[in-house]
Image (cartoon, rainbow, N blue to C red; front, side, top):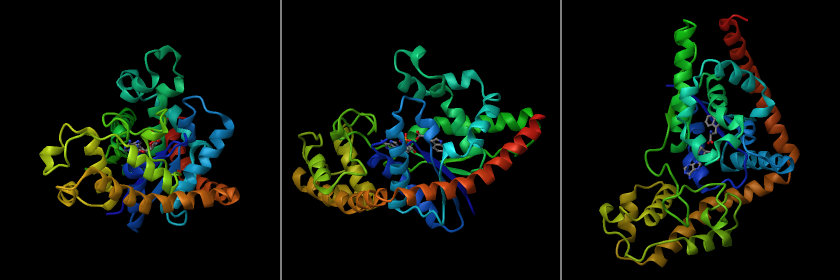
Length: 333
Ligand code: AMP
Ligand code: TRP
């Protein structure tokens, strides 16, 4: 069955292994199925829900786009664009914001985490962030949305908004409720310094993550220094429970090699940590370094990257504008 795929990544710098294994790798495999229509967005309007330096934001928009392309997304096969160049996203967010309920937004855990203790100081944008995300998805009638596990709640909110709109305006099936596509295994990549914390762009320690622009030596040294415990390597999958750092490193290895966790356990049974870490570093260098190298090459040609975004935005706006017009008609404008 043909699927309409939509997903987005924030251009907030430090794109990392978690973004790649949790999301971008999946974007590329979905593009491979020729029946799918894929749309991938650099969500720069979402990025400004927290303070950004204008010059760095511009650089990060290009860097995220370059990483998409270097990872295997092809602008001839998928629509690749940035959100701020398609004004319909903001317009849709306003229209849908009048359908969404405060009570729904108050439950969003990402807002609670990002706003921290002093909620009063968070931007209003950060609070209504999930409505803009719903607009991104619903304007394209997306049927499937590949994301990491942390976005599941936002997808549920998107479905609630779609259903309420259809009900309020008596237009059954007009807005499509999207399905999240969350990888079954290894959907949350954790910090290399603390296996209970998500690998994140905003972690102050660069050692906590493998960035998609790291060179070979840096990848190797980060893996060498990654936190582990002192028990021996696991004999079976029970041995892995309650060992968050080990579980994470085994997950990363399995995901990179496209193999089940059981096989990884079998492969390293009875071996020592340094042997496993060497193999892990090798596998990462083999998969990630070509992407980082290509990203850096692409970044030398800003015009090329800008043209991809311009072309993509034109295609996206044609689709999104039509849907916004339909929404406005239904609302009574
Ligand atoms: P963001 O950087 O927040 O825009 O995230 C882009 C995509 O990467 C989203 O689909 C996230 O769910 C996914 N993602 C971010 N961090 C991780 C992580 N540590 N593990 C798995 N997926 C992640
Ligand atoms: N909120 C997502 C994240 O932080 C990014 C995002 C914005 C997104 N709009 C989207 C993801 C639409 C999927 C679909 O990762």
